[in-house]
Amino acid sequence: MTENVVNIIGGGLAGCEAALYLASRGVKARLYEAKPKWRSAAHKSDGLAEIVCSNSLKSTVQTTAGGTLKNELDTLGCRLLEIARQNSVPAGSALAVDRERFSQAVTDAVYSDGNITVINEIVRDIDRTALTLVCAGPVCHDELARSLAELTGEKSLHFFDAAAPIVTGECVDMTKAFFGARYGKGDADYLNCPMTKEEYLAFYEALVGAERVIDEVGGVFEGCMPVEVMAARGVDALRYGPLRPVGFRDAGKPYAVLQLRRENTDSTLYNLVGFQTNLKFGEQKRVFSLIPALKDIEIVRYGVMHRNTFINAPVCLNSDLRLKAYGNIFIAGQLCGVEGYVESIATGLLAAVNAERVLRGEQTVVPPERTVLGALCKYIASPNSDFQPMNANFGILPPLDGVKKAERKQAYFDRSAVAMSDWAQKTGVRR
Image 1 (cartoon, rainbow, N blue to C red):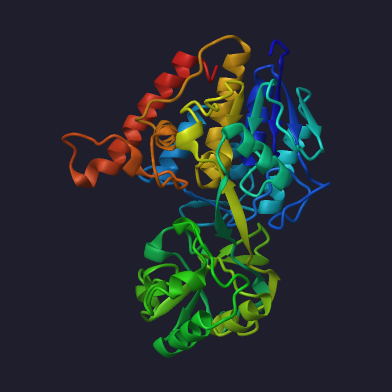
Image 2: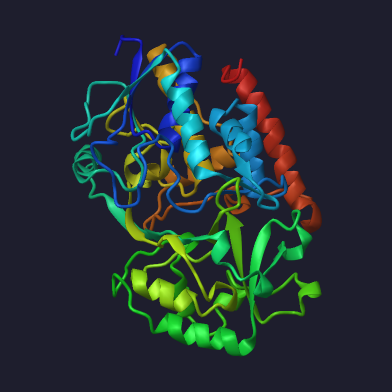
């Protein structure tokens, strides 16, 4: 524990942010990454910080919880947000990235830092004596999950997550599609594929009757639900979800609209927004080609479903992200019970902050509950008999007194900004 080094398991978003933070403070980090020796079914490349599902890091608008959390991370000097903006693609009011360029930029930053040593090994057992951040992600190696379960004294929980298909831009019939953003947000950044009522109903019937890879899926996370599971809830479920037709007054009021979001800066690849799926590959091509603009669909990455693992945080984790039974082991990223890319980055940063403080013999710290990050930390550590991963949202923040409803979101942002700035200065997180 006296050695000026921190072990980090996992080279995803949380692990890379943690390594870069520690390195910037003069702390040496050993970053253990299983690739290229082993990759989960969800991973496709050997790069660090690989984004495997949607390429969107969600809203940048400050009156959203996502925008508020991004502002908090900017206050703390977050490196990965900076890299994400440098490798962004147009996505209206959201921050979306070219996933390959983003991963390469993070990989370059990590490998070029003299305080970071990348070790390409599969970690099967967590060292109970070393100062360690476990950031291996929700699709970590089974043996690492077993070791984590032994440390926590609890069986690792899990739920199923899904990713949407990616198609070529060339396959989209532009006579049946148009650029635009719902409610006029952004500069026509989304490619929209409208459907009439008859076209939608034909698509819907094919979707709910299509063959799935896993017939019965338990524990689906509501924030990343397979499109066919959502559709099974009712014929109009998709029209109130990813296919909602609102905000297109100039497009003849379509009955349903699928949006495609750019995957890369060259605009040659597009993601089917909200179309995470567990359909068999052949069924994906058959069913999605029923959308008129995608009649000649060319899928370059099929949608997949994979198991996401997370710990029962309220039972075994403190709000500072340390295991209750092992004060030298921190859990960050989706393993700790947060959901989302930016949330994973945020917990990786906080775990690194506290690892450095442990190294220096100082007390660990947690941001005020008035911040989104602080509220997330409180949420995952609070008693909960039915614990599920949590996204950033204003609902977990302390209520505002005497603030009109119309002014509440801005007030949440303003309160968070002041609280995080004061906390960062007080704790010395950002020098």
